[in-house]
Length: 528
Ligand SMILES: [Zn+2]
Ligand SMILES: [Zn+2]
Ligand SMILES: [Zn+2]
Ligand SMILES: [Zn+2]
Ligand SMILES: [Zn+2]
Ligand SMILES: [Zn+2]
Ligand SMILES: [Zn+2]
Ligand SMILES: [Zn+2]
Image (tube, protein in one colour):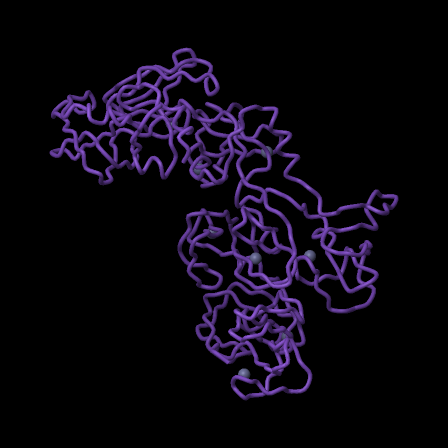
């Protein structure tokens, strides 16, 4: 972190600006440097008194402890490392910064009046964030506010990734009925501080601590004028040029960034053929753009997606691109088509990108919201949720990962003449998959036909690569073959598998080069 960051703060001991060598608490550095952080001049570190009598702990003297281990400060309730004052009898520890809080805090960019220190022996509820504080509070007598030290400098306006508009900090909200925080779905106390959207009809209110918890999800807005600008800039169209428009103002002929020829608008497919949208890789039958020179189709909604947008997963911009073989980092499916690139790290397929952070879903009676910290199992497939979080219910123990949420509602498969429907409940105790004939856990989601009593695992219905285009090239490292391979959903005649020797017809990988190597994906990997 650049030293410039610290210039805004002052030394926890002498309260002078931080110009020369400093010591910073490692935990504060990891989380977020704020007015509560323990930062001290190197020279002041040596001057710290070895024991102090402190108002917040009147019964015993507090002793300076110069260890480097982590401890919890009983005043600011935060984890710190480095020197602290403690009472070993009562297990009472305080951060050096909290031992000598500055008497006033003045920063007009955050609040128009100065805040003054008020030490009390009791806890209080902070007017700015609505949560409890201990002993050290700051008050503004003009506005009659009592707040945490950290809350004297809350950003007035922020742009949060999970809402399209800028949101504003308010100490109370007038004329509203009960509001739940749109992040944790617990009640927001309207007579205490929160962040909310001003746009009529939005009704977007969140807890201060919920919205400021993860720095990667918001951006501080210094000037209100920036809001409109920011909201507009995050929308750059994927349609490079509109060539023809009809009477209703719809673009009937366009040039799209993803295709070299012009695309034409149509109400439905000309022939009854099973086609996929080249953007989202799902079935396409009506309201679409097609290419008149080569087979290329896009749902109108997929063609109109912004080239650059801010997706709720991060506050930074996501860019739309296309690829023939890529793995989505959210549903973990390999696929072709359009992907949003988020922060250079993650590729997100369109099926995942279209899921909002708060959703209703057929398989559950309550709405679900995305919880970045969720680390248990997915109720759809039983997979452990690692890393990114999941969509969770606020009322009962239920969560879904991106993979289960983005499965199509119905699908055709040769085992049944009817469409198989995505099914969420199975009353049977023993269930088998009619495709692989193996055991199927009835507590997980599956596909079924109620007329014929057919049922199957989702992975058996879709195969390994449901979203991959036929004939795409798969890089050599993926299947451990020394040449690149081509993927085919079906092949003519029953070629013999180079790995297991059996005849195989579906989901074939075929060597692109001259070695006539061919195998089906289910064969174990190895060196061939
Ligand atoms: Zn507070
Ligand atoms: Zn909340
Ligand atoms: Zn809004
Ligand atoms: Zn599509
Ligand atoms: Zn995906
Ligand atoms: Zn529920
Ligand atoms: Zn059927
Ligand atoms: Zn085989």
